[in-house]
Amino acid sequence: MNRVSLLKTLEFSGYRLDEEVLIVRHATQKARVRREKGIPTLPEIMATECLLEVYQGYQQSGRFKHATQIVSCYSRGATPVQTVFYGVFDVLGNYPATEGALIAGQDWLVRRYHNPHFEYYCLRPQVAETDLSDQCLINWGGDYRRWIQPLKSPGRVSDKDIA
Image 1: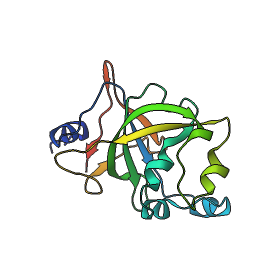
Image 2 (image 1 turned 90 degrees about the vertical axis):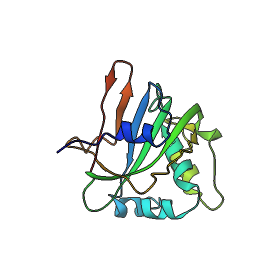
Image 3 (image 1 turned 90 degrees about the horizontal axis):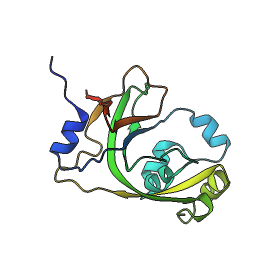
Image 4 (image 1 turned 60 degrees about the vertical axis):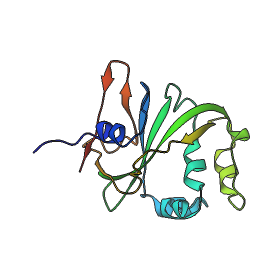
């Protein structure tokens, strides 16, 4: 069986990919723990307009340090191996978390992320000729515990297969 490359599929669809690209998977696990901390679950975040974009901008300091872009995905189903493509985002810069974007009614963003251990990465979504959001199932592979991985960097490509 021939493998279908995520990188080739994204480029064919019209996404522009630079040399420093991370692939990020937002997981649906730990719903009980999230609720106890007052943080919405991933489906709740995705149901609120623009909240996933803001939420994924808050990261531990240095997490997206060298990335010029991220390929954003989310887990679907009982296993994190089933991952769905969400979008490609250009990393425009980073700021202290206290200067990050906020959404009305989402006080948990301040409680959770406005501290010295986090930064806010300003992310701009790319628009492609063919929108693959929520339509492309990715095989995350055996290293499913790592939710952030290099997808493409100078001299190295760690591509994913489309399932």
